[in-house]
Length: 112
Length: 109
Image 1 (cartoon, each protein chain N blue to C red):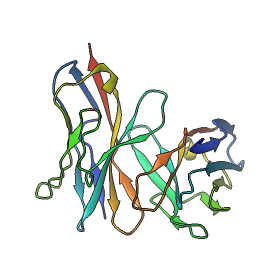
Image 2: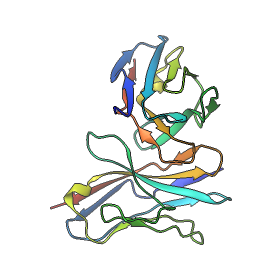
Image 3: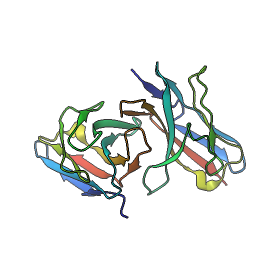
Image 4: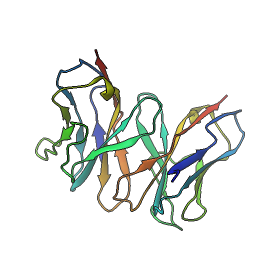
């Protein structure tokens, strides 16, 4: 089992460009999450999907959109990237939303 | 609103010394609390959760509802314990986890 996979690993964007971060899990988990990790600020929840077909805003949703494509995949889209979105992005999944979360390796995004 | 505070960003101890990573929370309901760990160049992973009352890699954490704390302890630190540790609170039934800012633990030889 690969667990939680994320692509790409690294990305550099210019201000105003758009991109989609991909996340997939092969553990038959129902819930999936997107976090950003900034120095000194821990992990902050951007969006989550408690189950296939549902998505909800987290703590810092502005500037992002998500799609729960199917049970396995949960993508995060930046429509118009800004320097403030420079961060490391983690995808995670859990069997139910009250279970432990399993994390992907992260995507390091730089917006110039 | 729920909140998790880890007051120490950096913590350094010598090998064999006891270590305590502090975590305080604010939440009006019944919380579920977790400790996650991120070793160098590895993924964030669960270390332990309060409901299981386990000891993992020699670490324990007790939920103190009176003091709203969930401190992580180990009596004898090892060099391989050096990592970033996150305390997290799960709001029961809501699916949203709140993470603290993390504590970087360094265990010196």
